[in-house]
Length: 413
Image 1 (cartoon, helix red, strand yellow):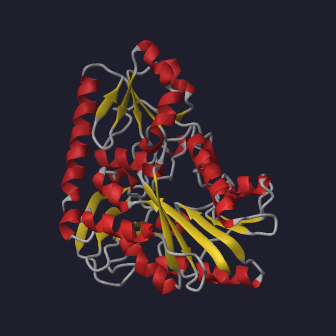
Image 2 (cartoon, helix red, strand yellow):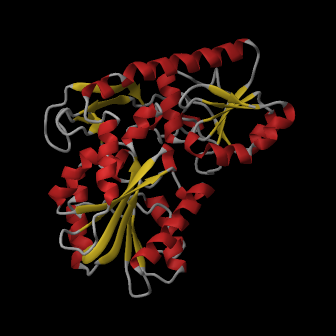
């Protein structure tokens, strides 16, 4: 079920301008069991629009959060070694920057399987995770991490505060885009923050999405596509002051926003104004920047279709690596199914043995590549392409080649 959201989620202005219309698509993580292969699936509109008043890019129609985050959620953060390294580096950085110790308290929103909080725990810093998906929350608790199974919003934050949960560091990595009500989420944060607390939120930067044609990062779990320009009023309305910005390479280019309560002692750095200026220079406050994106997206679709069809006509075999959400967006938007790609491999056992939503391509373990020796291996989660191509470097033994579709179609021998 979808709910029309034809007014802006941030400022309430009517939405009139299309950014990227990907047609109808299944929920990206709704994998299909083999014994259900003969049954139908639900497809939902996947259309991102831009607000010409505050420049928030957002889905025109919202699927219910419960469709994505539930007891059978298939994304486990710990299966990416590069993401674990990113998490460990963050813990080391923030521990030193804030002087965190055994008397401090850390809370992570959307803590998944404890991939990050485990490093605070190992350092002897008390922490708590907030995670609505039952199976990932259970995995975190199996690590001994206190994890509450709930959605973070004003109501649940008030309940946590009433239980004495006040923290020195509040963090959320790649969660802000996943919440349908930005004001309810960001507005909940002050309730659990101590007077000098810091909140950090990481999210893919809209500037990079546009510049690098990252349209495959648009899927139903992502209700919004974020810039600092669009978020500044949201933070201000919540009673939070943005005082620092970091530019990260993760997820194709991300921002890490540092915020605090208005009266906190954290000095505002020059990075905040510099980021806003960068966004303005990139055209994020001009409508033509957004309205031209769709045709470039359609050109990429046609180029990938042509390449794959030509390869099949030449008798080449094609497999893919990474049963990720962005890959499912790409495959469904481009109309690529099991008649083109034989299978996709993934290191996550929760995905293996199932079929990708929509395309119905079977998911296998990575060893399948070395058993079947395909001519091409299409890397779907391009944000960790270096990690995956290193793992699968052995395909070169039989002349296999890697194929990447972002930001343009190219082969890596």
